[in-house]
Amino acid sequence: MEKFIKKGQIIVGLDFDNAKSAFEITKLLNPKNYKLKVGSQLFTACGPKILDDLKKEGFDIFLDLKFHDTPNTVEKAVLEACKMSIWMLNIHLSGGLNMIDAAVKAKNSISPEILLIGVTVLTSLDQKDLSDIGVINNLQNHISSLLSLGKKAGIDGIVCSPKDLEHFKKEEMQSLISICPGIRVNEKRGGQKRTSTIHEAIKMGADYIVIAREITASPSPSKVINEIDTFFI
Ligand code: C5P
Image (cartoon, rainbow, N blue to C red):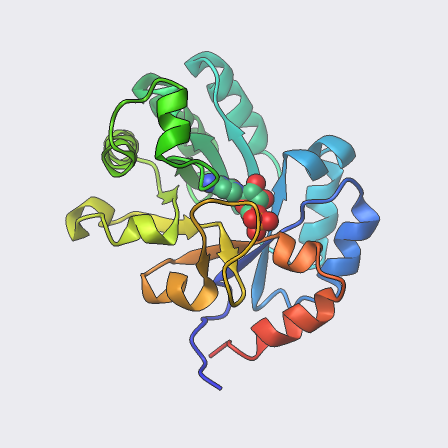
């Protein structure tokens, strides 16, 4: 069995509407191997307490609320988020340079060690979806423009599809970490338009990969986790 995943490289998306379901998954995970992602659904259902409860279990937590608002509002939201038990949080880079700048400054003023990540283009979108919302730029060029904006403002990394990674120039990604969702354990399936397998994503240079439904919607999450566990170096 080929071993290719470093410990801590996999982030499990706890996309649930209640804490009990989330803890049923976390009890199957070793916090040395896995980090957790709390997104809008679980955070809205349970509130900030869920972050403390998960942190107590020893996990690093990515707060995936994808802030996208006026610079002032995002600044205030980032300040509040950074008071919580988190390892990473994110914003939409399409909020523009002033908004990104406000988020970076807010994060650095309170907890510079927390990682602030920018979403480029959601992996659920393709070229047609972009043109439907009036973006006439080519998908890859659009992603690169957003990446440059984020870099200019000093973000720590980006969320992108593993396939986007091969289009970036080395210097573009220098000093930025990559977080790749849209990952399938083995073959490609599911509701996202730009997906890759874990193996492909790591080969393409993803620093972290996000897996949600492959685990959370599986009839046997422990079977999927046991399979992923065999890939750890
Ligand atoms: O279920 P699946 O593995 O496709 O879910 C991926 C997770 O990553 C979801 O929680 C989704 O909200 C998140 N995601 C993200 N950024 C993207 C695409 C998906 O954070 N660009």
